[in-house]
Structures are given as C-alpha cells and as structure tokens.
Image (cartoon, rainbow, N blue to C red; front, side):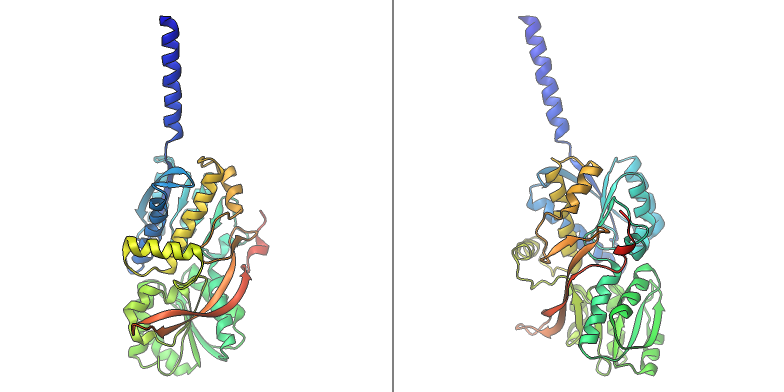
Length: 388
C-alpha cells in the first residue's frame, strides 16, 4: 500500500509539474521607440497591445503572455542588440513593436533567421515586402508605399496637377515618395529629402514657395510632422498651398498639437476613430476608459497586432511554434478595427483606404472625419516579387 501511495504521489506531482509547465507564459519581445520626437508612436503601440492583453485577463487567445518591452531609441544598432539579447537570454520566439523602418532593417533579418516570428505593428519597408520577404515575417499595419499610394490617388481624385513632395532620407521616406508618385497622375514640381532628426524646415519652405505647386505632399511622422506643419503655417504657406497627406503625417496627436491650422487638410488612412464597426467601437471604448487620450493609427495597429497574435495562439493551443503560428496567422482570423483585412501573398495587408478631412467638430475642435473610400482591397506593389 505504501509503495502504491508513493507511486500515486509521484504521478500527481508529475501531472502538477506538467500543468505548471503548460501554463508558462508565452514571451513576446516588443522592441519599439519610446523616446525622442517619435516616442509617442511606440507608446501608443505598446499601450494598445497591452490593452488587448488586459482585456483578456493577461492572456492572448487564451494563453498567458509576458510582454517584454524595450526602447530602441530610434537607433538601429540598439534595436539589434536588444533583439540579440531577447533571443539568446530571454528565449523570446515572438517579436513585435518596431515603429521605424531603419530599425526594422537592422532587427527583422536577425529575428527571422533565428527561427523566431516577427509581426510588425507599423514598419513595412519595401525590401522586406519583395525579394527579401520571409516566411516568419508578417506586417499588420501596411506596406510603406501603399499608404502613400492612397495619398497619391486622393490628390489625383481632388484634381491637383502639380505636387511638391518631401520626406526624410531613410527607407520609409523613400518608400513614401515612391508610393505617392506611383498613383499621382500630375507633375512633380519638386522632390526633397530631409533629415530624420530635422526640426528646422526654413530652407524647404523657401523651396516650396519658389516652386509654387498647387499641392504639397509630405511624410514626417511624429514630432517631425508637428514641427513641419507649424512652420508651414508660420511661413504663410498653409493658406496658399493645400496639403494632401497620408496617415502618419497627421494623426490625432499631431492634430491636437497643430490645432485649427490643420482645418481643411486632406488625409488618407486605413483607420479612423469614427469607423463604425463592432471591433473599433469595442477598442475605442476600452482605450478611452484605460488611457483617456485620443487614439492614433499606431494605437489601432498595436491593438490589431495583438488580436492577430491572439488568433494564432488560440489556434495553436498557446504554443508559439513557428510553423503552427505561421499557418494560423495567415488565416487572419480576427476582427480588425479597420474592417476588411487579410494577408496578401507576401504576408502584408490587403485592405481598404479612406479619404479623411480635418473639420471642426461640434465642440469647436478640429477632428479627422471620414469622407469616403479611395482604394478597395488594396495590396502592395512588391507582393509579386515575393516568393514564399
């Protein structure tokens, strides 16, 4: 009897140990930009991702998760070092969070080559969408060119003929101007690349004035966009030359900082706070309750990325196995805040793009108002180059 009791006790102990092991949280490495002019972009991605976890009681897809967050400081080398440490020391097999494409270029190849998964909530550089695509790399936000293609189409729809275009001199900036030019049917009156750390745009204002275009398209995310818009207004150009922008150049934080100066600006986006679908209503209510601040595109993308990860963890029973997770992610089995969503052949979004305009709301404050659809079921230019 004593031997049987010992064996039974051992069996129960093993079962308990197995149950405890099964409940070990899935570690998710979030490398994002939390400091500097673009710091609020990463903060919104982080907070929205955490919100999805909190809404599920510390889980995603029924699996307990541990979110490990570190600031890349918008430095590719720093992001690369963090990723190496998370891979080797923390045993992370699932990554997300990167805001800027230059950081993604340094981090993503190392992550996917190590057999881990990377699910992007923002950066979608062209090289990783085309010939350098990888089976372990997914993008939930957009491919960099595609959002600016929507701005080019919007500018064409609005009847503009001569555009002056500007963007920072890094991968996302190059993708931005390439995307705009691909869909804009008019003439390019001037094309300028700025510095990624630039805050004084006096020289660019002079060039715009000299070129005398009938519209300006500029891509300057985060604090760069706030500085550019303020100086554009101070130079007296906003009243003379209208702007057509894509989502990153005028989000809700930028709008609050610029104020009435932004009224009348046309913007294109895949998401807006006023989208009337169940998933977005649920997100907006939870975001407002948790943080009591305006939600940006970045927040919606961080939340959608968490939902995509949750759908995959649910399908795999909480096991972050790369092959099983990849197959589950491809199904895009979640309700996106933006509405219709699926992954294209290069594992980047196929989605709709909308025309927004800054108008004064009932409270007298400027707000982004959805006016109509610009592109339907739009993928990206590089998908045909990806061989998965």
